[in-house]
Image 1: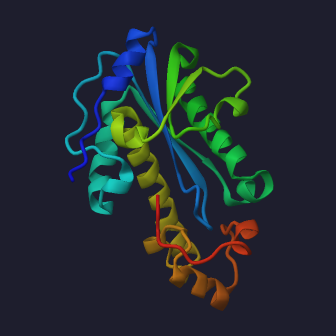
Image 2 (image 1 turned 180 degrees about the vertical axis):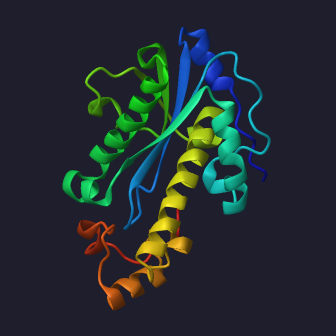
Amino acid sequence: MAVADPTLQFESELFASGARFVIGCDEVGRGAIAGPVAVGVCAIDAGVGPMPVGLRDSKMLSEKRRDVLAPQASAWGLYSAVGLASAREVDELGITACLGLAAKRALVTLHELGLGILESVVLLDGRHDWLSPALSNPPRVRTRVKADRDCASVAAASVIAKVHRDHLMIQADAVEPGYEWSGNKGYGSAGHFAAIERLGTASIHRVSWLKAAAPLSETA
């Protein structure tokens, strides 16, 4: 069964309810054992044009297609940004706190670019609002299950974040080779775990995760 393209239907409802801006928000790298967790944001207003052709949740796109769509998604939104929390921060603070920290950093970038954060509604993929506790003065947050699949602003954020983080992992593979990060992007593949057994941990491994982790296939 074919999956429908995302639309702006839910965003339009938020504009009708008084939001000046909608900020689509999605995370990438939550389940990785190496590298940062990344949160992408893509802000739009009611005058946004048609979304890029072929835009989907990043998990539904090939790496090649994501690389094409990411700059288009950035140009489509008013502003976009990616915030990061490092592997060390994940070890020290935990993943949920680091999702909020990365999102906060992304929203600070939008604010510095001139976006009125408190005039916005943040549309967050999933059921749980992990963003509001990270902010001293949070905007309105709406959670929505499968927003990355159904809502164009969140799909755009997911692609922007995925490509940004993937490129960081490819760069890291050149600095600390042997862990197959260009392919696994820091997720717990069998080859990745075999490399840890052979080489030990690298500077960007989430050390606290490795004891409980088992080989996993790549996921976004």
